[in-house]
Image 1: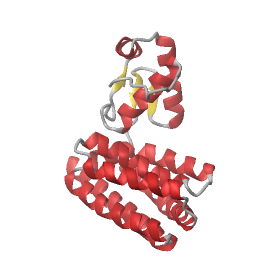
Image 2 (image 1 turned 120 degrees about the horizontal axis):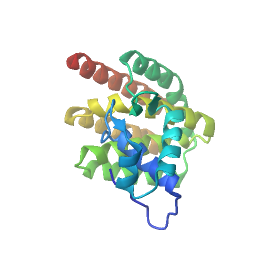
Image 3 (image 1 turned 45 degrees about the vertical axis):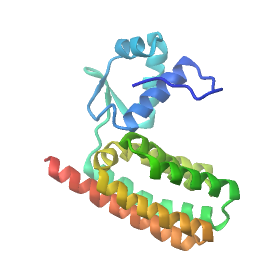
Length: 218
């Protein structure tokens, strides 16, 4: 887990710790059930324990960790039943967000999506692929211009991330890459209905993959 600043970016210690921990949880570096010891995190990131404590409170409010009276902060474990509920809600909301986004997509958004698609094709490290894929879909979801809807979808995505990361093997990445290519074509053509259908199908396939992984772990 490394704390890295984007060139030109200024962040408080609290923000830096929160962003570093969030990234490590979402890319699977910190796995479900992992304990987050304040003193260890402070030493690793070279900060005091105060911003670590503040960051942990933020992550708990986002649902990424839980604060246990006996074990302290622990990366939250998501049940398969909760994942099913998350994907049910996403399939109700995300296709509509994408339909609205694609119908009036701006050239700069399309260019950014094209750039991310190229980076994803070249990505070799699974963690980088996961991060770029999340950025691609979040950019598209947010392009509809409905900030509250995008925030809800981002929150749902974060809460399912632990299991989705576990299911992201080479086969899943290949399937997702093919889906993303078709989705990008729909974006270029301004075909919101086709894009919405592709997103709905992708979410169904992802849930199927996640459920298979969970069953095999039992």
